[in-house]
Amino acid sequence: MKCDHCDNLATVHLIEIKGGKKIEKHLCEEHAIKEGVAVKVQSAPINDLLEKFVLKHSGPEATDEPLLCPSCDTTYDQFRKNGVLGCPDCYSTFAEPLKHLLERAHEGASKHFGKVPQRAGIDEIRQQRLIRLRRDLEDAVTQEQYERAAQIRDELEEAEID
Amino acid sequence: MSLGDLPKHAGTWLSGEGPQGDVVLSSRVRLARNIAGFPFLSTATESQRNELLSLAQKRILDANLAQDMLWIDLADSPKLDRQLLVERHLISRQHCHSDGPRGVAVSADESLAIMVNEEDHLRLQILRSGMQLEDAYKQADQDDDKLERHVDYAYTSQLGYLTACPTNIGTGIRVSVMLHLPGLKLTGEIEKLKNAAKDMHLAIRGFYGEGSDAVGDLFQVSNQTTLGKTEKQLLDDFQDTIIPQMIEYEIKSRNALLEHRPTVLDDKIFRALGALSNARLLGKEETLYLLSYVRLGVSLKRIDDIPMHTLNELYLLTQPAHLQKIAGERLSGPQRRELRANFVRQHLKV
Ligand SMILES: [Zn+2]
Ligand SMILES: [Zn+2]
Image 1 (tube, protein in one colour):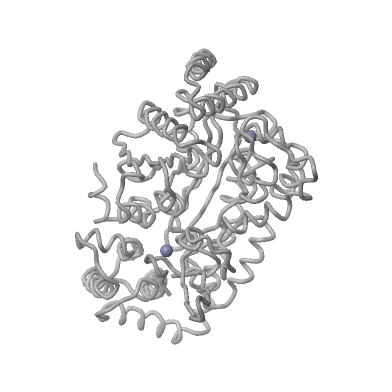
Image 2 (cartoon, rainbow over the protein chains, first blue to last red):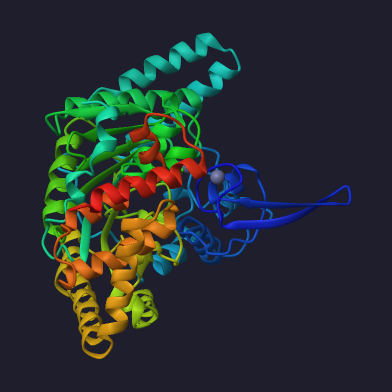
């Protein structure tokens, strides 16, 4: 059966009662997500599985002191919900709770044994600094602090130079 | 090269001429990479996404990865074009349907595609016909090296390449092989294979990445573990053990069918051929279902006048966006079914 909105296969089927009227809906994954319907998926697609996997293995829910990434303001709870992290720095912020998840996802591994970039990248402190400067820049612009924004732009330019 | 040239033929990766082409349709290697100094896309602002997009576009073109690279700005592309790219396995469904600044770079022969601003900043993919994983990885590795001369990747020695989802961290590699397994399906052995795959931490999906109900008996086998193993270990596992075993299993099933149920087998094959050669209306999934038996018939030499690449091509060209591109206009469901049937009849005529 086709999705009500496009040609993709409808995998989400639901019946809604609105004003005493029964409305049937048949949607593909994308449109189900777009419509924001929290629904049962008949044949779970892989993204869904991964998210469930993340939820299942991401440890206990955060307690009163929520873990917050200082570089991108993502909380651990947000990660549990979305299944994706906010920035590379989240890996060190959430290192402790992520440890279990990584081991479950990667057959017990916790260390990389693969390709090393030829340039070995830029060091982690500089990566972190760039991400934070970029966030501060966005904040300054939204708050219309243009002088501060210009100053951050200069700092950013300097930090980017090899 | 433009998008308009694509819909008439399948990419070279579907030529059906690759090694072990009667069971293995294609090999694919995908690398997930993020640019250092930027947040992942879930927290990137609109302006950061724009910055990433133009940066990536520029660096990809600078890196000179292929003679003729086509850059497609997806936010600017009509839906039909984006669907065409999904059908050709050049972008993911997520990339097609999502919003915001995003794009894809595609080489003229479609063997290389780099999605920009999907789940990760960059997702580089190499596609090859038949069983050519090693070759695909070599190419991906080289292109990755070339790109890396122009961008710094988010990387730590402890965790490797940092990705938005922790399930891709480390090598960031996803190795996938597309298998045609009608024998295992007919003998009912496919469930065993699926269970075995699960135990080996492998994912099995359909032709278009859908759930476990693969249409047309096409199954995509890929790794899930990306941390703690080198790329070579992973490739060797696929190349020396996993895929050869699956191929052997499929061949055994086909031979068992030939030996014990030849009439039932021929009936399925020639009914499917009859339907495809004579139908006046064909549904999308019905076509994939029928093509599977004809493909099996060609592979087992029960049918000898249809080349394999014609069938592989039909898998792709009978998809809705392709049909509409070939027709040059939007078509309704019934119109598509009619055109699909005509198109298949023409192609199967010898
Ligand atoms: Zn839809
Ligand atoms: Zn973060």
